[in-house]
Structure formats: C-alpha cells, structure tokens
Length: 327
Image (cartoon, rainbow, N blue to C red; front, side):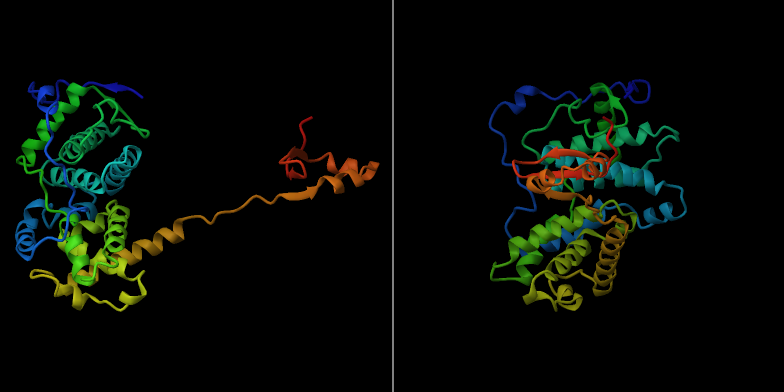
C-alpha cells in the first residue's frame, strides 16, 4: 500500500495533543447506548437539537443525481465498520464517524481523484476524531489504518485533515444520534425493564447494519431510533403487535409517517441482504469406516479408490475428497 503525504493539501497547523493531559485521571467516558433512560426533558432537548447534526435535506438527492458517489461512500462506511469491529470500539464511535463524514461531504466537495485517496483520508480522520470522543484507549494514527486500508497516511497528514473536519463541522462533535434515544424508547416500550437490554442491543445491531445505505440518510436520529426499536420488538412475541402509532406517542416531535417509512426501508434492506447472500454449500464428502476400506482391498476397489485423496480424520473415520490424486 502506498504511503501518502499530502502536506501541500492542507494548512501547516497541526493538532498537537499534550500527552501529559491524558496521563492523569480521565473523565468518565460514557456511551449513550449504555446510559440509563433519559428524562423527558433531555429527550425534548435532543429532538430540538438533532436537526443541527444531520446533513441538509438535499444531501440524499446528490447521490440520486450521482453528484456524489454512493458506492464510494458505502466502501468508506464499510471500512469504518471493519475497524470498529477490529478494535472493539463502541457502536456510537462507528456511528459518529459516519455522521462526521456525511456532514463534511454535505458542506465541502472533495477534490476529484480517480484513485479515491481524499475520501480514504477523510474516513481515517473522522474515525480518529470519533474514537477520541468515545474511546478510553485510542490506537495510534498508523495503527488505526488497518483492515485493508487502500492507503497509509502519515500522522501529520491525518492531523491536518482532522483540523479541516473540525473547522467544517464548527467543532460540533457531540452529535445527537439514534443512540441518544434508544434507551428511552426501549423503556417506553417495556417499562418493566424485562426486555430493555435486548431491545437496545438489537436496535443497535440494526442501526449499524443499515448506515451504509444512502437511503437511511433521509431520516433524523429520533425517527431511526423509533423505527429500529420497533424492528427489535418484532423479535419478542409480547411486543410483536407494537405499531408506529404507539411509537409516535413516546415523545413530542416524532412523525408516524416517517417512522413507518423508515421501518419499511429497514425491512426492505434486510430482505435484499438475504437475497444477495449466497447460500452456504457444504462440500459433499463421502465418509467410510476403516473396516469398510480394508474389506474392499481387491483390485477393483483399489483402482476406483485411487481417484481420491484420503486423509485421516481420526482413528476410525476417513474422508474422501473429490479431487484427483496427484500422487
């Protein structure tokens, strides 16, 4: 993989972090996914502020008109998710990375490059910033570039890109996300707390499995949270009949029509993914016992068995691989 230095592409300002500032007592790093149910007042504040942390309404139209490359965005998000799983980052870290990326792309157009390194650099910078926001331990900028990264960028280059991202986002990194609402909605659905842990976990999985889709960008975080909690509720018999009308009552500002639309898109994506996933085909292996092999030691059986390679599995079983013997 080529090492890329883009020192001439950005300003000379560097994001120098004081290592001594991280050596003392760290502030408690909490994730919205693991926080207790938020109060009605907090949720009302999230509803009011969420519009400030999403791309503009015409962002998705740019993908439809192909002024933005949806497949390139999907590749970038897929890489972010791979790194999130590789290091065991919190789901919120992955979501924030994608949120920063989308908000940046909405506000600034990257230079047209056939090899795609600007978008890769942006992805690394967004993931680095999100990890610094949410993770107690953050890999070095070089170690962060794993999981088949197309290019390896120098730390100086990534730091400069981080400053560009911070400037474009107006330093507003503490975004309102679906995770700001999930625990509250799960509690609204199951006030006993019996299934809230499952609802939060399952809704989180649904969110991460759908953030690659550009169509998901049409909906605000509160709507995504409500729709994914409804999808999660489908897996619990007691809540299988919960509908969007009930979800709309969970807090002011929710739209039943938007929740239904988002819910349907999630279902459609799930169906498409199942169709595209090839069925697992198990190799056809003929298993015979040692006794059977030894009893057929005549010339005819030895000539027919010579077309297979036999490998010993244990003391009593052999497997015939359907491949011609190279001996």
